[in-house]
Image 1 (cartoon, helix red, strand yellow):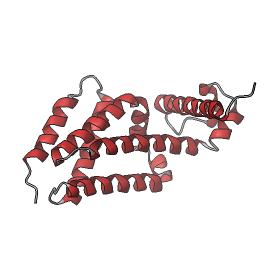
Image 2: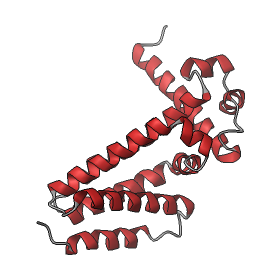
Image 3: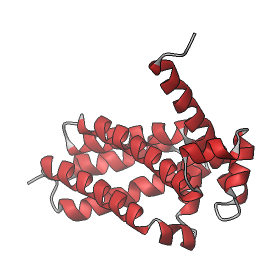
Length: 195
């Protein structure tokens, strides 16, 4: 009996995830530049042709990983929107970001590592800049909505804080004092005067 469309979609998504997980392992182990498309197929246990069916190039695999990272960011944004005050917003943002980083630690570890490889950054400059602007725009709008003075600069500071926390959490998942850091950052927003 032939599979249903829903079953086919599940198989396609499972294969896509297998390919991306293989890419994360290889990019983490040997670096993006040293990883060939053939090695990706081998690591995933699929034929090269099947990999090309999903991703036409290694760059397309990388872009898919970045898109998955942005999906994590959107989940975090949605959680943060629920915060009524600036402190609540920041606390929800950082907690959600921490949970997403823990859940997808390997992918984020690769993402942070790739950002320090000039050829990767150069090839993805447009994508990375678009993502950065999107995140800053969200943070600024939400801080402004909560009457945080100088919301544009505060968005830059908060963005850098999230990035720093993310990198520390990826590097030191067991030792990083996430709860205390979140409490400290959020308390600074609780003490600030709004307009």
